[in-house]
Image (cartoon, rainbow, N blue to C red; front, side):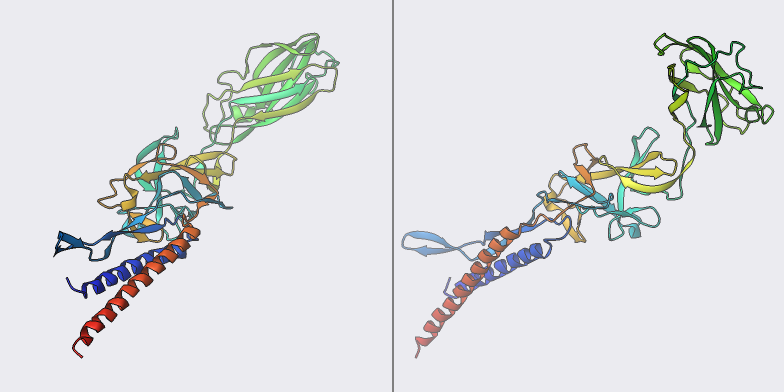
Length: 424
């Protein structure tokens, strides 16, 4: 091994440090790239040559080589955003995305959660790749295999028939008793007070339900629920009683008992003539008092709702894709999937903040949010995990290493020049 060998040792140092500078430059260039994971270079010495000397055989190094460029998957900081569809992962997981141009033939993985819904309702990243997830059954459980997350923007949500009505009222204890009782043909003179509320049937149609209260004796009132008879197969414009009962109050004006208890409409009385469910029955929550104060409805509400159209989409912290409908009823449409790897450092970069599975990374473990593959934050993005201060320190060290190896070459050149000058 002659003097010229040190030239190649210097060259190997220049190559290794040049590659290291490329990695550092790439890290710095992506310091503001959402979800970017930094890299580092690991060097290794090259196979040494053996030389013989008076003390025996020794080894002389032949330079340095690039062993591997490691991907650093440390957690980046989170940036709060205004978009509910911006998602950040806390933990080892990756979002799963797939290229629709290939028919979603293979999955890619990313930490960049700047997602949105496109014109066709698909949940996509900025490059148009579909975000993958699961369909949900009626109970909100995941079913089937991974599919592109999509929300039908023209979808409707089924109506919910009214089952419960809450009446928070006061009935005037000074009202005149009407012992004869309630007559649906003459409600105004056979009752002391009335209140109406709109309820929904199984098809989402609304019906007016009116409850008449009649004082029959001190601390005793009757109630009668009526609807337009034409809506339940009778003569339109007349009232039909669909439920009745008695309210008993104590001497302090508080409700003492109900007959029946609970207060309900009569079974099979709400036989709507529009073809909806014929067995609808309403249960009253009578939050009623009898004080010496004018009869008044403090509040009333019912739990039914009509058919609604999709007006907004968002994502919750459990990865559920939530559709908000015009009837005020949210609904879980699909669920986001996450993946993790035994050796994420061996994933292959494929550009645009995406990674591909490799033979060394291991097979992906796919699950849902909170199942060991990570948690998500909405209205947030994971920033690059590049530490600029550390990168600039590495840059100084790499520059010094490069300069030192260049000195090895120039010094060796001077030594070789001395050898050539021996003949002069």
